[in-house]
Image 1 (cartoon, rainbow over the protein chains, first blue to last red):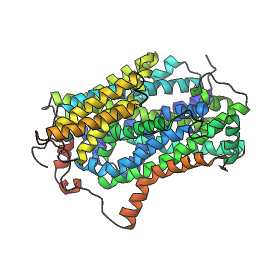
Image 2 (cartoon, helix red, strand yellow):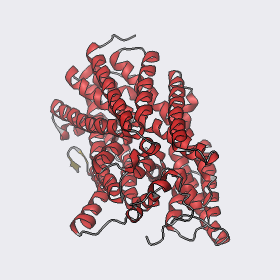
Image 3 (cartoon, rainbow over the protein chains, first blue to last red):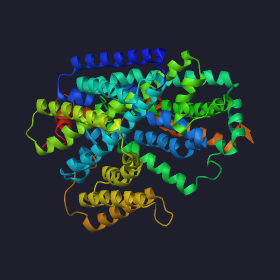
Image 4 (cartoon, rainbow over the protein chains, first blue to last red):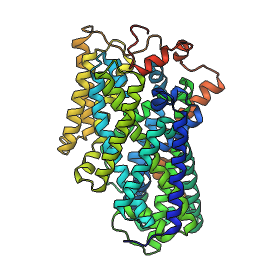
Length: 479
Length: 66
């Protein structure tokens, strides 16, 4: 066991106490189920923006992305971050359509565009599974990191983190989550920029970092990692990550929580700018981390250990604390949002479908209960995560984009599109997209292209064969 | 050729990513702030009653209210 660092441990405890206090305050402001689910649909632009940013940046972003830059260089910008940023801006252009539907969840939208209410529990179950797996991965990442930094054993740390975020999410729902996100988002962005500033000073400036990074391996500063990524592979990854922005339950819930369409548009416009600057800084910080660890003769076992090693072995304690705050903010803000999503998905998309007569109080109870159950089971799974969870997690982007991107959003814009065609397209995209991902592709064509392409084909064929065969909800008149 | 110590192609990817993330902000600033065009907001038309809240809370089953 590593030595306990009282300095870092103290910072971590204060941090947890602050977010718990916000959770208790959020509880006093939560009077009904709409407050818990969607901030009473009264979220303003500042809160919505920082909540989106904080939720967007996860353990994968901070630990994983810096590790990825350590392993393969700046090519991460080309195949992943560009797609995420393009997706955020593209959602800005579609968000008025989504917000004007005035529905709470992604399954609600699917039911609306297809005209089949049964799509709610079915899509809800898929999103619930996806959300729970994401939750487990976040908890594993958070606990590994905090254990490495504070020295507290992993099996204790995972429960401490799990119980704290379950507590404040259950107490205040999206009110607690949004306000803690506001705090965490601003801290996270400021801390990463400050840390980058320290590294720029320490390593001789921006140009010097890039020169030293390229001197370690010229492929590190090549957009395709020296040819490791093909153009087809890069485009497929961009499409896969682009699509996740449109299809994640928590993004749709955030849009529903905004007080009006103007706020919905503004929060995505502002988030796109903040996130593109943040990720550019983070990727450069990854380059700086690699240069610093190499110069300091510090070796790591896996690339994900790069950032924790920088914090514990390279930077002074004062800077280390700033970085811990950034990492904890990134992880907890994503974890609480995903946990909140499991509560709303269970109560809103599944429970209320089977119990349509249930009242607000009963749905609020189910939301809170589901939040506790999924939180505790995710924490228990994170204590000893099976390898299959990590493998399944890799299918997330392919599944969401292949199944939902084109059918649902074309349904929003194409007034005469058949509901049956949309459903058939969702099923085909999901099966073929995930199927080819599991089997490693088909004739060298990336699985995202197979999934999205087959979904489009079925959608077009279905629209010809089934047009006018049944009613659907969907496109907004007058848009 | 290098810019800030990285090949120009890599630099272009950074610039493209910053632009990609800023497309929404550029549109909002130009269309809704400078040109003053209102956003497409039909939820406001339904405000003043509980229809908005009801629709969100019941999954869109508004009994023909839309």
